[in-house]
Amino acid sequence: MDKIPEFTVNGSRKLTASEVLQFLKKNPDVIPRQSYPSSIYFLLNRDNFLIAYKQWLAFAINEANQSETKAKYIYDLNGLKEDQMIHWLYSDLMRELKGQVKSGAINYYNNPALETILRRSDIFRDIKKELANKILQGRPTAKATCLKYNKLDLSLAGIGGNNLKSGQKPTILHPSDSRLQLEEIMYDEEVIQRCGSQVFRFYDQKNPTKMLDFWVYNPFPAEIFKILLSNHEGLRELNLKSLKRGSQFEFYSQGTMVPRGSRIPMGGLPGDAYVMYPGMEALDCEGINILFNDAETSMILSEAARIFSFDHFKALDKASNEGDRLGTSGATTYHCNNYTAPLHKDNDAVPGICSQYQLQARKDLKEYSFIYGDYRKYVVARTNSLWY
Image (cartoon, one colour):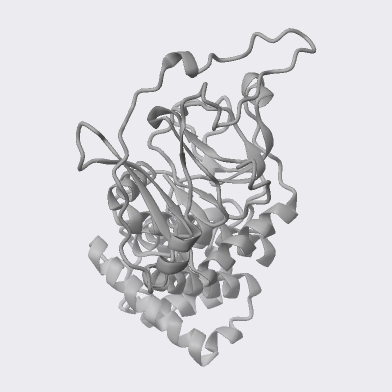
């Protein structure tokens, strides 16, 4: 719904920030979190709030208006005629909420689920507001030698499936094997200690100003990295169902990949609605907290990418703008453990952002290295990495 709804029953009671919070306090169940879990994200930014107002909040307030017998207590909903007016209301609302959090007034909402939503929304905004400064604090701008673009020799690309006979073992090559003709990109701990992080950028040889991809070692400062690790560990402990790939893909893979976000149901048709993956419910405080953990993770990765390449961030943000929200983005996240995959190409709308939280592997073998086949490079993995 793009249009702001208008209602026949309308009063003179101005819908202020404090009135919205008071309404939610009296009617916490108007948030459709059971049927629409991502509705709990309605306070994370002004776009989410605008969507929520048009889809369910205004209608909930209108329903309350119709049951009110005294005219002076009926809200003036038709006074909010433009998107900008709702954006102003949102800004006032978040200032009011911050005041209630600081004063302790939020402790008296007498609804644990609503209180959790309000508190986590406030915390989310604080993390996002301070994120860029924390990532850049004490770190000089990093520059690296431009790396040339080379087309991959198709004889090295491999073919879908395999020609192995029963019981026959596949040939396994280390990325450094001369037959693969891959150049190694390796982090320098001395640089990371001195500068805080190390950035490698891949540029188009024919268009040297166009950055194709990037890799950042140690992008997240300790405080932010702790949040990512905690959120990831919380998901791992839930023992959620891993995503299943095709049999040919699975032959070369290992580990688990757990999706978080929304997708069209398998076998869905054009026009079918997006639904959240199994295990993403907002039925109680535990489920609400887990969903906010997902939102924080998505936001941190996205905002970090914004710092290192705004063009890449913008492309992902635009491509995921129409999807159902995982926090403030429509992008889906995938949380992996002990995961490997064969070199392949996905038909995604736009390339994604990846991060290595913890590396528990043999460094001497450079396990879990990431291969950029198109560039004839392989990047040695390290704990706390970000790439595109």
